[in-house]
Length: 115
Image (cartoon, rainbow, N blue to C red; front, top):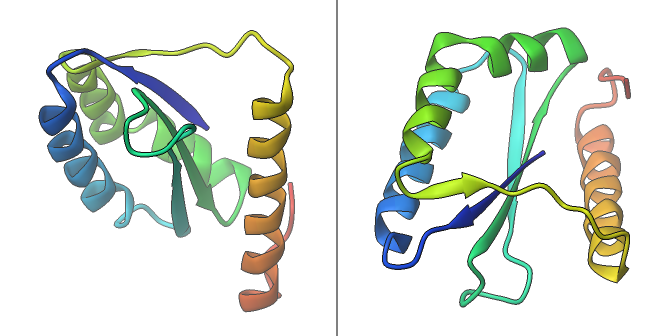
């Protein structure tokens, strides 16, 4: 999961970047899907990007790929990496959403495994 804090006035640039990121990510071997969470709705400056691939090795390969690294570096022009330090309700909700998405994926792709 990646969390980005969008810089003021850079929302459109970030959204354009995110579309480009997703275009490349969808081509990654083992790609299953992406969930984007905007805590607090459309006016939120935080974006949680949860990407799902069939296994840990393919996820690491995507995260370490030149495409992913270059795109994440570009994202720094529009946002900064956000590190969550609270253990409050928001984190719990995000965790539940992730678990629900995994269960849905497993129902649609029963041959995949949880790692």
